[in-house]
Length: 480
Image (cartoon, rainbow, N blue to C red; front, side):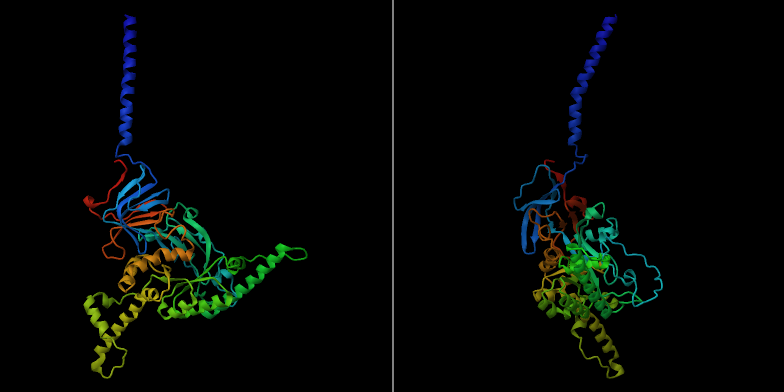
């Protein structure tokens, strides 16, 4: 009896083993291949899309493949790797990610606090005077700042960002709009000295002329200190060690022509003043902003100076928003330089003429990028001082104002990459370059075009979620 029970128990045991070994592989295999279980891959292939590799270089229907943040292949018949996550690009257009030539993206504005009284307003501390060129944006950059996602969803993948401040806010860095912390975002640190004609309130230098004088003084003092430090480093015998000065030290790479000055200007006079400093001191300079750049085109073209035009525009008059476009055209057509009012009967005509003048003046700002393009001046775009919510609308306004789509795209990609020294790694969709890619529902700068995906260094962000489910592009692994 006991022998029979032992044999029966043994048979049940081995039967259970056979059952487990027979079923488990099938169960595990089914689970592994289940579509419900996402499989991580850093390889993407966008198939059947219109691909704009660079302005004027288009593949009507092709595939772009990128792996580990690097573009692997682009072409009509690019090979799709077995491990790629495939995105159906039918009806979509692929562009290189946008580059902002100067911004404060990722850097929160400091809280305004009451300024303490200064004993000698003609000689305040550097901090009080707004002179902080030693300040590193790396210590301020926050990937969680709302401006990062706001910029990224517009198609920007890379920014040149600088601290907030006045005359000399600090040192800029080139950063990707993705990363867990500042060090993960920054690809090039300490790339620029930010400068602007923004004086400190109530102390010197508080005026444009005072700012120019102070910049000359700082450059001269820093040049002298640099020579002293070089002498001391060469032969310190008999020399007192030169005293440290963090502001002067920040000028050293500028003096050595190792770092450009990014001079932000808000009117034509500031452009001329910045170019005066550049010529006098032998600076390498990039002019940014140029809000009234239509009055400085000849000067800029003669100087050959790199420029980044503002993406800002004056607000459209509120009354104009309520008028149809054909009526606005009639108002513009009736505009005259004659502003005198002969009698009270002409008051209404004068009012209409002044309204037309508002539109004519604003139109000069709208057409400014077109004027630079027609003059043969390469330019990038800058968002410095412009609200992110206005950027897309303003870019479309520039195109409506006569700027070609190719010229606008060049300003956002290849020209910005050239100015920032990034052409080897970004600005176009070519094999070997960083996978900074945007995918749109159609051609850029059209009213109904939306941005569906933004890839930053190969990391995917999806934004357009309004597409109907049946029309939504598919994203799948190869073989599914």
